[in-house]
Image (cartoon, rainbow, N blue to C red; front, side, top):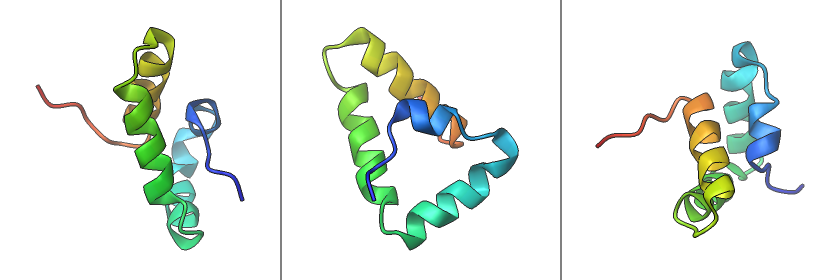
Length: 65
């Protein structure tokens, strides 16, 4: 199973996010997925950073200043 990327995550309907997170946890893909999003968030590519931030927000992770 491949790790979902930002686009995959944003395609998950809001009402299915909890089940998506549960499925990723069961598949042991949640940590690699979050790690990949964090890598994108810290990358030099603005588009990747923006998509990763949106994906994390979609999953319910909030940005703190």
